[in-house]
Length: 257
Image (cartoon, rainbow, N blue to C red; front, side):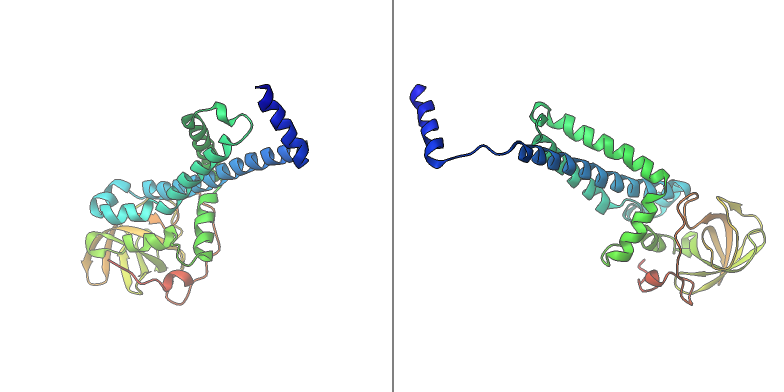
């Protein structure tokens, strides 16, 4: 043991090894903690987008839509990209936390659980403030490959023969008759004399709505329920429409059945 210690001391002297300044260790720990907090923040943002999508589904008859189109429904309302992002950054939070000064003392389940719990709490607060919708919309504008909830939702609500249509109000009243233009450019006369409104419908030109009901004649739809296009209470974001009543970005996306 003495020879081993002596050899180490001789090696230090021979190579002139100097101890690192203490501030470097503090900086490393601060960086690791900062990375952990960043992981929780990104996880929280992911949770807020997930909650935004799910809350929109709940408000517009989730059970009925699942029965009608189970596959498209899950593809529309479960944002897989954000689920994967949350998992990835949860794993990153674990790796970073394990390398902090006291991280080795905690089990993986404890660190990952704490990270996900913090992300869920933060995501709930961000969702309540409307951040989920804002992130979803802005991300869709910046990343061409990303399709936001509005774009995904269009395809799910364009099945008139199965009792669902959506589009822009052209004219009319929410208590008698509405004329709407759907996302393919087709105009519908929507009978609303016996309709139930599931949210605030102002019935002003340009307002986008979703409709449950049935086709009673070519171009005529008898409505039983009206829903706002956007979940009630969500942060409102200015939108630019083209002449066909659709968002400029959405108009370029072909509809798929």
